[in-house]
Image 1 (spheres, helix red, strand yellow):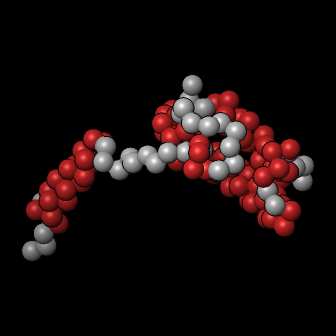
Image 2 (cartoon, rainbow, N blue to C red; image 1 turned 90 degrees about the horizontal axis):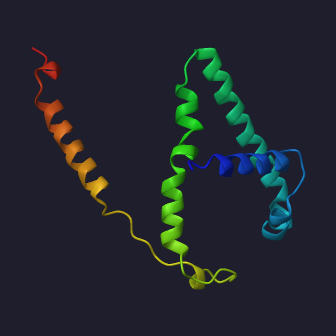
Length: 135
């Protein structure tokens, strides 16, 4: 639920990569010539996380954490849904992406249509409001 375990294990792997310990999955998937880049990218990512946490304490606000760290948590159910739709019922142990992935079109959902309607309503409201008219 909400990806707490997933985020914990991913951050653990990123921390291990940042100190130079390469996980078995990374040894299998990452080419030798880009392992140094993976290590430095992990270090930069952890630095961003630490700066976000320190800025939240400095500003006495939860907003930096909410905008940078928690989207991984509350977006996790949507990630699980789209992953299940994209890979469900197909081959599991295949290196060919055509055998274990299907095309999933997500752009024409009702949420996008409602958002576009609300956006156009707000734009026309702002352009006709007397607040922005200068006399």
